[in-house]
Amino acid sequence: MTVSYALLGLLEESDRHGYDLKHSYDRRFGAAKPVRFGQIYRILAQLVRDGRIQIVAVEPGAGPDRKRYAITPEGVAELDTWLGEPEEPQPDLQPVLFTKIVLALASGRPADEFLDAQRARHLDAMRELTTARRSAATSHDALLADFRLFHLEADLRWIDHTAARLAELAREVRDGGAVEGA
Image: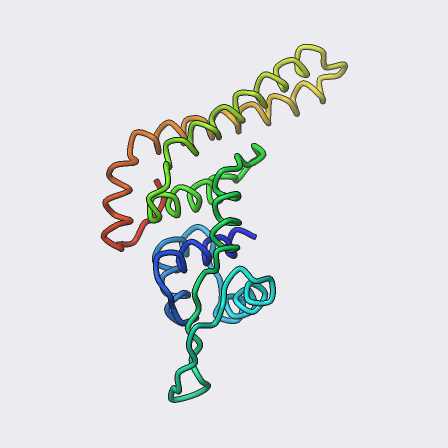
């Protein structure tokens, strides 16, 4: 699902061909979540079908005709909604958060506000887990709560680290350079 939103965010920057989208995606997000060309084109077809993007031009090429895609107002609204929703804290969440932060910075949205909302969601989850751990009936339940708490703590350190580096990351995103984790 994250790839769909990444493509919407890239199309919000400018209209693009599928080939260009794949390379832009790889440059910004490929290290965290690689995708194949076929996957890009399947997602583009689904986004067109769902009215999130549209084909704005069909140009002849050496092989098949090249379609140029643009985001629709519905796509912008869906991207706004997704960017504004904190993710459920879970192990291996950083690639999703990283994608949201890069897309927010690329589009001029308030990445710091997204990080603040995510931090608040993580702290809520930590309070719930701490309560569950205190009332755990078995060592198994307590260890499971500890496992989740330690992962949330790591996520919070990453969120704070990213917040401290937002200006630097914003410059890299604006310059179109490779962004390989915050």
